[in-house]
Length: 100
Image (cartoon, rainbow, N blue to C red; front, side, top):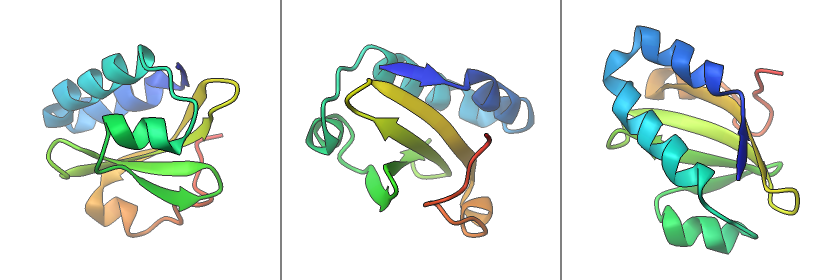
């Protein structure tokens, strides 16, 4: 999978240093994945959730943080839309939030 916007994760880790290892592990796992559908994603990440508009939420660092991505399974592209604490996550609409 091609992941777009890694600097978003790196910048987040400058503030939340404890998230770095978990986000790096997520990045490494996903980069070498070959998902063709939600089913493939769910097999690798059972706690991930679809939220609509081709977006999916991942629990990061034991559910301490949330990561929202938009996935085009056909093109094998993932766009980072949001990363934050649960409090931050509660303030956004997961279906529309974007760094674009």
